[in-house]
Length: 354
Ligand SMILES: NC(=O)c1ccc[n+]([C@@H]2O[C@H](COP(=O)([O-])OP(=O)(O)OC[C@H]3O[C@@H](n4cnc5c(N)ncnc54)[C@H](O)[C@@H]3O)[C@@H](O)[C@H]2O)c1
Image 1 (spheres, protein in one colour):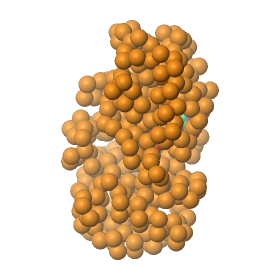
Image 2 (cartoon, protein in one colour):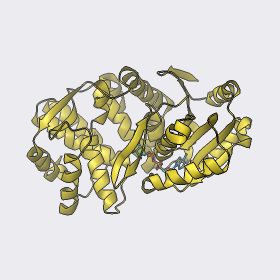
Image 3 (cartoon, helix red, strand yellow):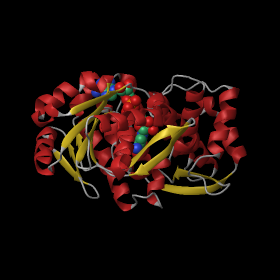
Image 4 (spheres, helix red, strand yellow):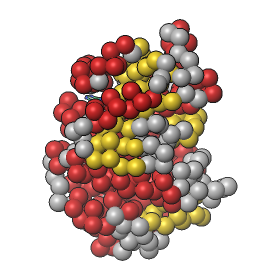
């Protein structure tokens, strides 16, 4: 097992993470355990968890319906209600067992219930292992805007069992892999070089890849929990990607977070090329690899309009200026403000050719 030290807690990865969880629970002296999961983590992951961590056999199980469209305040009401009805108190521990929707929502619920109770994350998707469960950003979508309501509230521990990925579809593995590509592009050139040799879902989700991606994200979070400077680098691909995801979800189209981020990285990479933060050789490397894994998303004229609106209202902007985190070469980043909306619009129009 590997242990990565975060700000005030540890991230346990691999064989032995359940032993670490047993030890953690014995030490933590909680008054009760509340496992939040969805129907998929309930059927695929909960039995394994209960088998390896017998203390949790007494836990209350709060099972939610899966899906990004359930990452809402309405679902929080349901969870706050269930916690109240089953007698959760200030010393209860929330255990988020699931993908990024569960850890974002469960973390938010924990941060607000009785002004904040402890929680831990047991991520069960690749995306939540390498990204969503790490770093203390919690929240829900509101009026169609992603993560519009939320808090920064850190877990007391993260327990990563890559074995949970066996039941995850290839599409969901590619979904999570987009965030691995992102962190390599903005933080570690050597890791990026290694990734470009990987082709299969099994390679994308190996324990070594997961561990390196977590290390990189954790290093950034430790330096800048509140996203005042370096943590902004994690937004590469997300200014356009989040807007695309929101626009497509608004139109009830089928889109996963990582798929939108892959498209966002292509377009923001092209903007970096226009603004000369990366060379044409670097952009070619980036686009060749992303295009070898992700098929292009169809963006209609209607989606494009919605999308521009979301980009302009992105919370990462400063005043009326568009601000994007762009790769500076490969392996570092630069925050560029004052990006012309026209450049973004032209890049969108040119997306299918990138
Ligand atoms: N807080 C952060 O820093 C951060 C970072 C990145 C993404 N996110 C958020 O994470 C969310 C996306 O996370 P996600 O991709 O994990 O989505 P998700 O939670 O919706 O999980 C994807 C699907 O996989 C299913 N599933 C979960 N574990 C499974 C397993 N082991 N086997 C089979 N199926 C399983 C889920 O039920 C769901 O249907 C988005 O809401 C995004 O905004 C948050």
